[in-house]
Structure formats: C-alpha cells, structure tokens
Image (cartoon, rainbow, N blue to C red; front, side):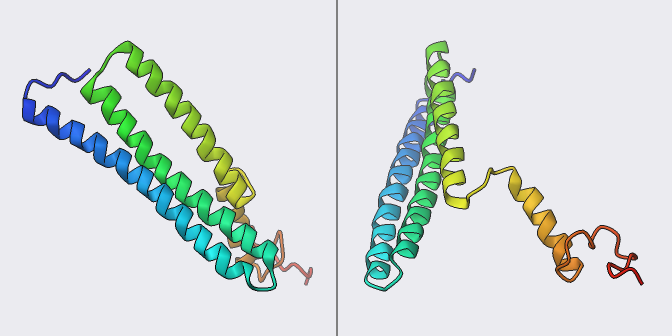
Length: 147
C-alpha cells in the first residue's frame, strides 16, 4: 500500500477523488438529459420504436462512461487515500458490481457480448475481402464458383 506523508499530496488525491466522482455523476446526468432530448425530438416523428432504441443506447453509453469515472474515483480513494483491508474488500465489491453493470449495459446496447466484437469484426473483414460471399475470404486464391 501507498502511505502519503505530505499533506499537500493527500489533499491532491482527495481533490482528485472529488473531481472523478463529480465527473462521473455529471456525465450520467448530462447524458440522461441529452438522451431525453434526442428521444423527445425523435418521438414526435413516426418511428417511435427507433426513438426508444436511440434513447436506450444513448443513455446506456452515458451510464457506462459515468461508471468508468466513478470506478476510477473509488480506486484512488481505496488504494491511495485510505488503504485498509476493509476498503479493499469494499472496492472489490464495487468493481465487481460496476463491471457486471458495464457488461450488462454493453450487451443491452450492442446486442452481443463484448468479446464477440473481435469475432464479428473478423467476419465482416472476411466478407468484405471476398466480395460479400461468406467463407471465401479465408483463401483468396480459391474461386468460390469452382472455376
């Protein structure tokens, strides 16, 4: 653990935690207001289901970003300011809960697991390299028509 002997350094880390927590909260609040505005504008149109999906996606992304700031603040507070075993256990619990929330929101927004991004990107690049024909991008020298 890190022990801070300089009072100015301790004050700096306390301020950093406050700034990170405030930034996380503001990102979530501003994101919610922005998502609501986008939803209300789009809701007046004819495609209300699309407006709802855009609202969920925008709000989810702002929550994810806000959670990143809040986790960073918790890490600084638990590891630098007051490093006790109890604080580390609380930090581990918070990180687990927020990680679960981040993964859940990511699945909700994107419609697939985070680790499927790599597989999906590979399939897209293979399809693009083969003229859109699945299975043809792996071996560019093979003609898919058999000639």
